[in-house]
Image (cartoon, rainbow, N blue to C red; front, side):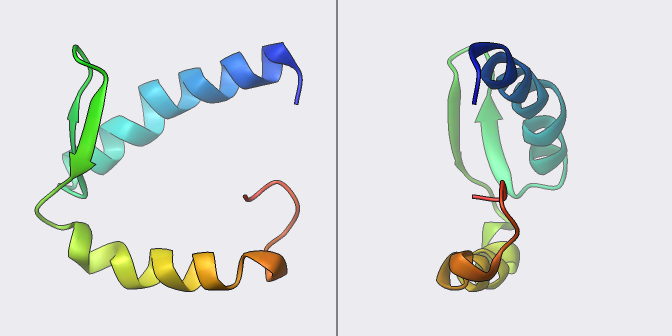
Length: 64
């Protein structure tokens, strides 16, 4: 991944993904302190995350 792609990905995470996850209480995000921790609804998505992690070799290129 190039430096430009890395910067773009980080911007996308900060401005799109983290706010959406925080809005749904999956994470507790403090952008001022650059901190993320599990939110009150994290347990609802944890089984999906575990399933994806345990099958990472079957995921399309670029997903991990």
